[in-house]
Every structure is written in C-alpha cells, then in structure tokens.
Length: 99
Image (cartoon, rainbow, N blue to C red; front, side, top):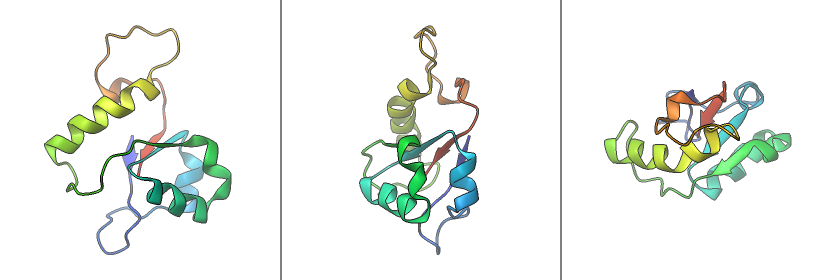
C-alpha cells in the first residue's frame, strides 16, 4: 500500500501516470482529488474510489488513519472473504493507492 499527494509543495510522493497505472485501486479523499487524477490519466476512472474525507488532516494523523481504515477496508476485502479483518493492510488487493 502506498500514498501520494496532488499538491507539489507538500506531497512527499506526487501522483504520476506511472503510479496511477501501477495501482489496482486508488482511494481519493475528495472529488477534487479524483478530478486531478483523471486530468493526468483519464483511463483510471474505474479504479478510483472517492472516500469523501475532508482534506484537513496531516499525514499519519491518528484520526485520519482511523477514518481511512473504516472507509477503505470494505473495498479491500475480496468477495466471499470473512468480515473479521479490520485492518486495511490485510487486504488481498496487492496494489492499493491512497491520494
């Protein structure tokens, strides 16, 4: 699992065509992030999931991590897998990407 940003000044990893193509799923916090991704790589539309999380948190902020886990985990579980897993990192999706 990796993360990237859309704002050049603050993103340690800036999104790029190569990273977008690499990812199997892309989790965007807001619709604006989705628009920015599609501006770079329009063919990514089917792999982007907007989580509707206000972009007001710092990277690795504990409340943000909790919200990301709650909102992204259902998308990461394989169909038919047990619902017992609560960790985003236990995903069967090998290449999720958070923007």
